[in-house]
Image (cartoon, rainbow, N blue to C red; front, side):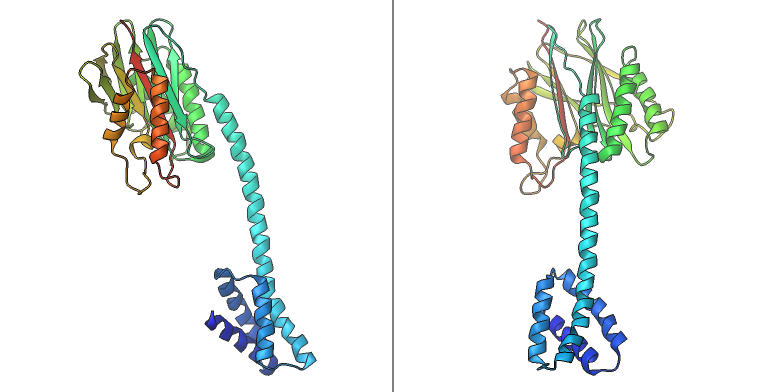
Length: 335
């Protein structure tokens, strides 16, 4: 601050008693930029000006009046900064309104109804970190003992991510009723590759559950491995399949696997908002803690389980390091 006071004194001396007024005005520009960076207010500059005039013993009325040219030049820069600030705030207000509209549209268009069955129970939760989510889940009841489900995560945020998810939903609704997971991912990949921004990709875990035979058929497009909780053995199995993220390569192929689901076993699918959650000390969560949460409430309905896990994670999470979070659980309830 002492350096700035001395600089302003030099500017006043040069302008009042020197012969290079243009140079004094040039110095005003750099001086203004420095005081703005230090978050100095215009009122403080006016006080500095008055104090320096007294300290320099400037008593002649004409010189005092002349010195106001320098004060005005410095304050003008503050005016520009304030106008820039107001312009930025107006743009932010418009942006916020657009995000509100996008959020409302996304909530309406991407909302997935959770069906009820006697042979299985389903729970799901998807919470955005901000107004618009890059996560998505969908459930399709084939009405013939078959159920398709998917959990996806857009590598990208904001309105473009919402648009990408909307396209994926309509693609899945179009293809999902008659396709196996590997075939559905192939078709969804073409949708993303042809219609979504080249810098935006989508991971997805896609499952088809036959609750007549208790068989799960599944494929993955670079998504987090899902879990299968074996109720009788109280053990978790990782279920995953090879496949590149959607939107990277045209005509990509996706591996498909199958596994039998026992009574009370649970299929658990999630996004990296769960696995990469940051705690208050900025360390990543130990995923074994999430498994222990599931064990604690394994006899509850899956919707109660996902809600319990979400609330537990929110208590642990660093509020400044939030990410979209989605958790889907399907429990075999066939006696």
